[in-house]
Image 1 (cartoon, rainbow, N blue to C red):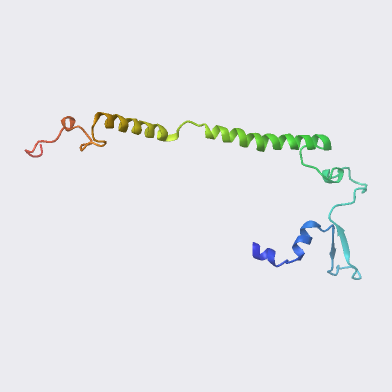
Image 2 (cartoon, rainbow, N blue to C red; image 1 turned 90 degrees about the horizontal axis):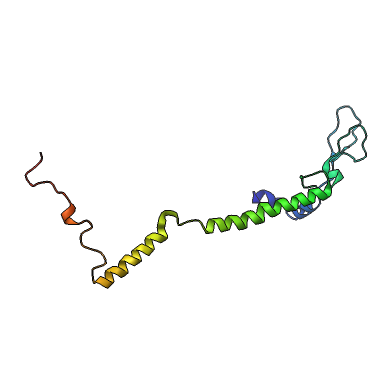
Length: 145
């Protein structure tokens, strides 16, 4: 993508700052003497014959919320305030104060409490047997039954 943009070189800022307002066709029309045809990107505002006028002609700063420019700007500001500011602040606060997922913090606190209790009682931090030997039912040495 960047390699394609680099082909434009110094003309790129000029193209982005001033979009063209009309195109001139240099091809020869089929039934004419060879004059260049000029076409407008946007039809002139004073054209008669159709009743529909683009919102961008009526209001150059049209945001797409309403045909009234004042209501359009107000709805845009309210929409962006609630859509971005409030959603980010309330959403971030909600995510920050979610309960401990997976009980990781609780497990750490519980492990620290058990370590302190075992140190106080003089016991080793980790016993040599994970399970109590008296509670394990082992098979008899006589073989399989």
